[in-house]
Image (cartoon, rainbow, N blue to C red; front, side):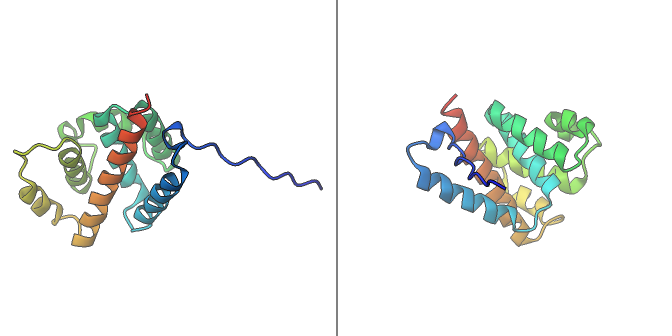
Length: 148
């Protein structure tokens, strides 16, 4: 049997000139993903931040990943109004509220109160991981949007 080595995957245009940086960010993303937050919640977080940031590429990617991990289309359709519907658990709502607060930074936001609410559903370690998830998707969104 003839084995042909596949061509190296092309880097996204945003990183064509900085491949080492792209690899480092990818490694950071893998580390964040391995910290125990369930994939379906990660998908909701990354999808919502990508919607807020207006990153069409990322929205499409996170929708596909969420569906792959058994998220329902009905919930995906309602993520934009997560705080107005009963389709999301209180744990998910707390994470989505944190996501929105950290994505659209506002000096008037009461982060201490949000963190207190998070602590009813997440450990301090999990809050740190949620914060890293939000920070990382905001970075990816900004890089991608800068190349639209």
